Amino acid sequence: MKRIFSVLLLLSQSVYAVKPDTNPANLPAAKKNTALQTSQQLTLRQKLILLEKKQTQNTNHFIFDLPVTYNKKVSQWISFFQGRGRNFFRQWLEKSSKYMPQIQSDLKAAGLPTDLAFMVMIESGFSATAVSSAQAVGPWQFIQSTGRNYGLRQAHWIDERRDLQKSTQAAIRYLKDLYAEFGSWYLVAASYNMGENGLRKQIMKHRTKDFWELVRRQALPPETQDYVPKILAAMMISKAPNLYGFRDLDPYFPVAKETIFAPGGTDLDLLADHLNITRKALRDLNAEIILGYIPQQVIGHTIRIPKGSQLAAQTFFREQNKKLALE
Image 1 (spheres, rainbow, N blue to C red):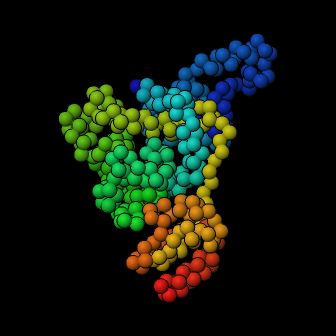
Image 2 (cartoon, helix red, strand yellow):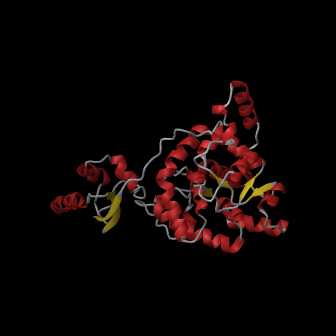
Image 3 (cartoon, one colour):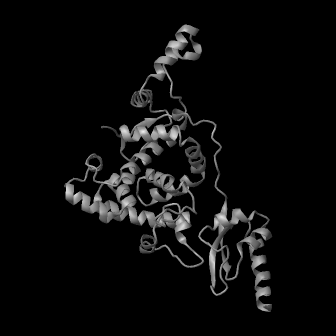
């Protein structure tokens, strides 16, 4: 097992970067082939070390704020994401530009490692509508009980587990509690995946709080044994996608939005038509409203609309209230 802490990765340099006087592009054909063959034979660890040595104080770089372990399990998941899982991981990378900034900003404001955001990538691929076999829901995949314990409202028409901002705040509170107990971010991730009670029992049974030792002893469920390696693999690839062969990405961009109080009876599809935006766009902004409308018996609810739509939305609400009064 080899551990690399605070590995520096260059975004602007390629995986096969070499000294300027041996750049394959500037070499004769015979020497060019030799240089490329040599670089292709480098292990991932050697490539990381090579990039680290080429750092200068004036170079833009990324730093991991979680401890990075590179071992066989992590390597296997990197290979999987580069191979059979390439298509969906590419989609995750493209979506990350839309969702990661908000998640990481909230984590940083709470004093937590921003790399914990990669849990969302692995949990749900940033999907608000993701549902697991255990009925965990939303970007952070909260089960019903944990969601309620951490303040996420769930009713027949609303499920705040599907709201990225609200579920991130709930996850922050949950992660802080887990870290206060286990004192290791690897164990925090493991307990998030398998449940703190199950992890607590295994720690007591094996008398160790070393995640990798628990893995070696087969003390954790197979899914949990792979959960942390998946996060580490996603972190490594995402911080330097070119290094791992992910090029020409088509990034998603966040929608500029604002909030407004919508009265009971508001139908999101009709409001979207009035605002001249797609129905899907407005539903995506308000994924927590699972029925697509706010029930009339509810006083109202704060929703998100595209920035600059306040006046148009207020006009819609006035017209809606008139119609409801006539019914």
